[in-house]
Length: 443
Image (cartoon, rainbow, N blue to C red):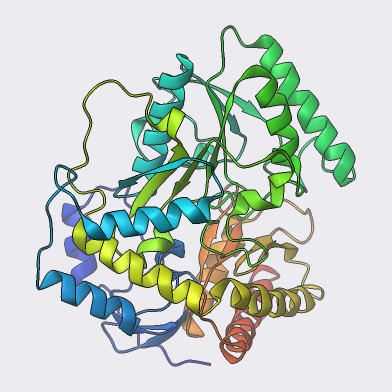
């Protein structure tokens, strides 16, 4: 067990609460200040060391303080930090060329943004302009960002503070495999039922729907997903109506799922998406996002448009070094191998713990759903207690899901087998401690 120095009534936390909005959430009863990191570990202001299994919300994709990325950023910072899209940028073109080739989208064009939210906003702008419609299909339990537009298509009510929206959003089934009206069906029947639901929704839509936006694995939703091939089945329906498919790869991109470089490739039987959005991991902590789309779709805008900060010299230099390291070191393969071992270990741990309903996900994108053992109902309290306990054992994890009852595990893709075992052991201790607390026993 790691020794963690407590930081009761932190002056920095008091200052944070006095100046930041109340709705900006922080983890832990006593929030921590992370001061530096190395590899898969970070340290807080009290000197406590943690194994990082969340990576700044799936953003530190390769490693903390990766020398190749740090060197690229430092070198670029000594030249010029910023110029905007009004000027040519060699780094941006180099990175866009690589992403276009990797995307799987034919005749691809790339537009850089500063975040996944902005990337999804741009994708929706493209789709609704191209289709001349403000109707959008989204999956239930989804999350696509925190802007006014992206909140309007978010199917997870915990992250949707307003019903107002510039879009008319129609929600379809398919994001959650093991709960809901189709959970009892096998994969083929589940897919058929979701497709029938989609057809029914389209039959009720009053106008031409612009696009379906979907996360191949729902991130904030608790790392849930439908069966492989579901989105391909959707795409066959969409293609008949000329409706675009937007794949939100903000969390599933860059090989994190292990089996595929992009999440959509688990659903590739009907071809690639029309639009793909990315962010988070590509910048390894730098503010980087973007959109890939067929030229016909990307070029549909007729008004002037630029990006002041998207694709800046320093962010693209860092992202290019990060992507090069990821590909050269086959981190997708590492995510598949180490992630598979970690999932098996978590499944073995959870088999004897009634508090755990399900271990799910793939690669190094794993979710653990927690419930009340007696009723099987989702337990946000259990997730909060495990989050706190894991920190005490020197492990940082995330949480999400419907009502916040799922643990989210997404370490940097360089995670070693030994570190996976270390993290699994810490999580086992945290789960057992929490189960004892909820049962009224002594830890």
